[in-house]
Image 1: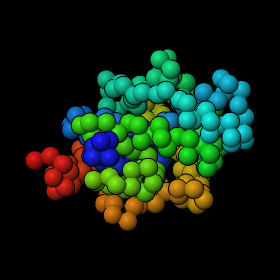
Image 2 (image 1 turned 30 degrees about the horizontal axis):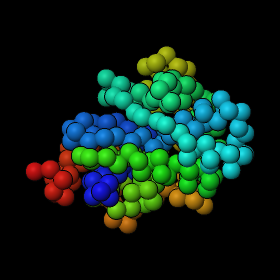
Image 3 (image 1 turned 120 degrees about the vertical axis):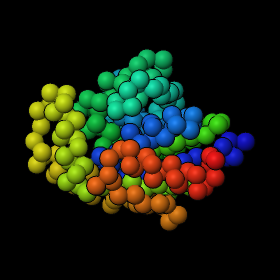
Image 4 (image 1 turned 135 degrees about the horizontal axis):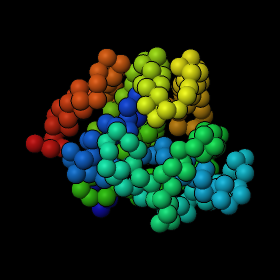
Length: 230
């Protein structure tokens, strides 16, 4: 039964490093991987193709329940997973500003979150799953064997994102990034449906002063303590 398959959830605010840690952890354990945040962007791209407005909650919820999505390793742990929608790669399409803005507008909708919930849970397959997002441990996989809440100061998260974008020759203001992150935090934490917060039984890790290797080492210690691996 799928409910016996172990799940490790990694929740936290934007820019905390959830995706990078989740990829490395899944690879280390040989588990499947779910980037739940990407699903909202995938839905945004799919909705645009179907000419569905971002305020048409019923149509968005219905479409969410029909998505056929899978993730594949990108070959670079520092880059997002390759995303396949209906056998077509949409990795770049979902990373556009337009997709991100629409995803932000539709993600608080109850119909959307409910429509995507079954899709998210379908990623739970043997031998196990690492799921990163904002409500993985509190809502989607409330029975997860290990729940981690990964956070960092808004200033450090903005600096990390700034460096990523500069490396890609994308011009951006550090101040604007910081303000955007603070606004996103407020929106995620205050939304009525599945607000961002640590699960009651989650381990909180602050990565403000830690690099990826140090965070992963702490996560692996928790994995061993929980008996997920020897």
